[in-house]
Length: 121
Image (cartoon, rainbow, N blue to C red; front, side, top):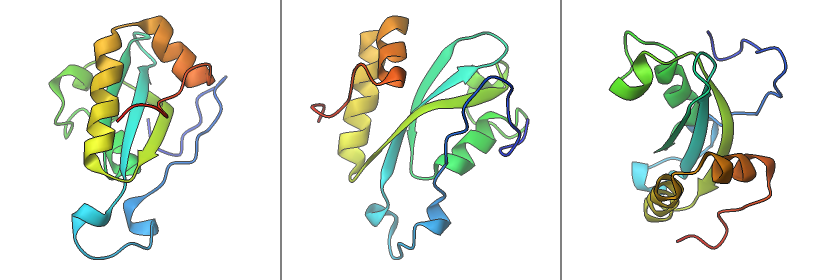
């Protein structure tokens, strides 16, 4: 599955690219994203964080170069949710919060907008 390939029955989500952000300088000025992926083969969710969402999704969907052992054999993956944070501390805090919830229901409410990460940090 390629990044631009549309999955039937899904709504495409624009994926920001790091090099398109117009930001320069050190990596510390780049925004961080928390994201939730859904496996199209198993229906399971994966929660992660990154500075380059498009590149990370490409990695998840390329088993030969995917650094994550957990997602390598469970693809293809589609992006369900992402939220931008201005610091890595905020993003990692939000990622840990979602993972601590250990709830499919919570993740689904986050994806549909019934829950937010606005008060997490």
